[in-house]
Amino acid sequence: MLKFLNSRAARIVTVLLLVQAALLYSAIRPEIVPPSRPLDSVPTTLGSWQLAQTGVIEQEVLDVLKADDILNRVYCTSATGDCAKTQQGVAANLFVASFRTQRNGKTPHSPKNCLPGSGWVPLSSGEMPIDVGLAAPISVNRYLIAYGSQRQLVLYWYQSRNRVVANEYKAKFWVMADAIRLNRTDTALVRVIVPLVDRDEAQAQATATDFVKSFYSTLLDYLPS
Image (cartoon, rainbow, N blue to C red; front, side, top):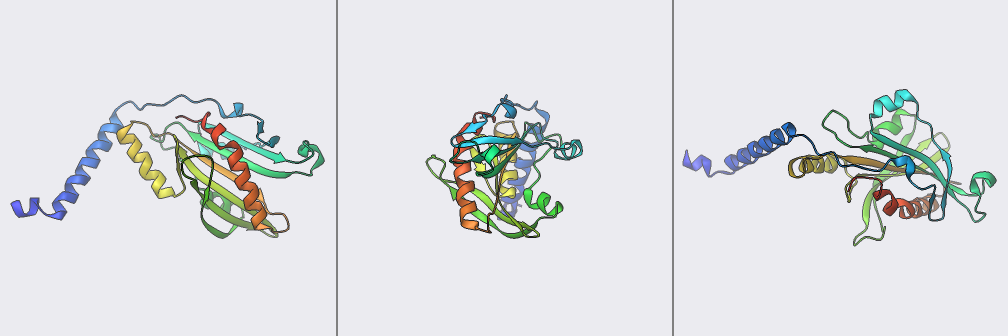
């Protein structure tokens, strides 16, 4: 018996029981739901980028997403300063779905699952770093998709407090860790889509990177810290 208690299997069982107890304890405690500013108050000008259009999401889609707050906008940038009217600018779609809690079954939907359901076909996927002015670059998902002759570059990640997580499984792990340590499960899905012009993938990536740099620090002011 003593030999078993000192075995690796016993240590694993002990850890699992402790994690289970911690999860049970965190589940019965009233969750801390930190306050946040409404996403529709995010500025219409972000660096050199300007609001060109506010996207409309159908109610049936909202019912599926179950997010507590959503931002869906198209921003553009142009040397003319009026790209929304002249159509001479480069556009980028910013979508943010904020979840104040995930204990009631709400959870972000991965674009890797949603976009194919809309008819878009994945061509390549991976992760890429972006220097947003922090001590180290953030790592985000890079996803190239196609619909007929159209091509789009998608960047997305999960934002929890000041933590950026690309991998879906790691994001779930950190939600569990925050539930145990901090008694909170809030997170947000941040997604950027830039169309490829003349299938120029390098230019689309440069555009998407510039756009992320323009809004990242501002967006943090509208998500729980």
